[in-house]
Length: 273
Image 1 (cartoon, helix red, strand yellow):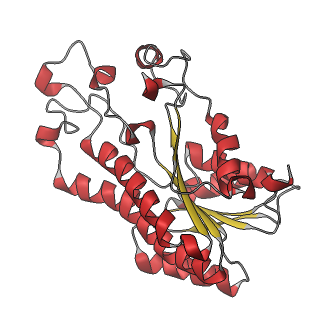
Image 2 (cartoon, rainbow, N blue to C red):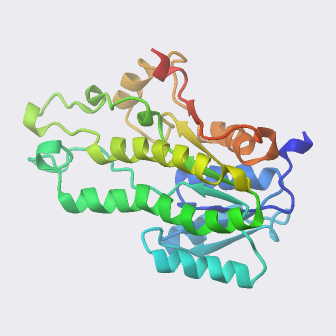
């Protein structure tokens, strides 16, 4: 079990105030890491930080406001950390925009026919460009120090297309039906490409990169949606938010020292059907 020990290691999590961002933070805290929680939403980040802060981890957890779409902002955070004696050993690229599929207009803007270029640009900037920038800035330092781990959080939609039947509304015409937007698939598939690129780029300098692709997580979805989705999953249920902690611990620790460039899909078996 010593291979899972991250004592004296410093990890940075982007999008840390989100549902899984909090869980990734907890996963790393559980095995001894010092964790820097980052997010662009200061209010949510402070709330998440305060909820996680306790007497056991008060010296191993802190937060920084960081916008992953801003190269200068990321560099400023990296410099602040460095000036305070913190060198990032582990980076979890978790920040993303997860558009909620819902009936919000007569002409559903999630549909490809109506999808806005501004939405495309912004969502890719957060979910894909942000991961590249963080990897570039923090990964360069990892390579210089001769070791490091980058973990990209993708999705089961990194290996298959969205099943738009999950979002179908009986009271809407075909052209008004909401869908999972094109950006989500493109970003998650793109993260796997980024993972493979990074895995080979710095491998000889001790930096590994892998991806974790979670399936659906229970988070207050409608009974109708849950029923439709669970019928597609061999285990007949969605995941609890804490069920990915063990995978994060494995992928970020010396327990996985020979794993590099892989996409670990945890979706209850849905992707093998």
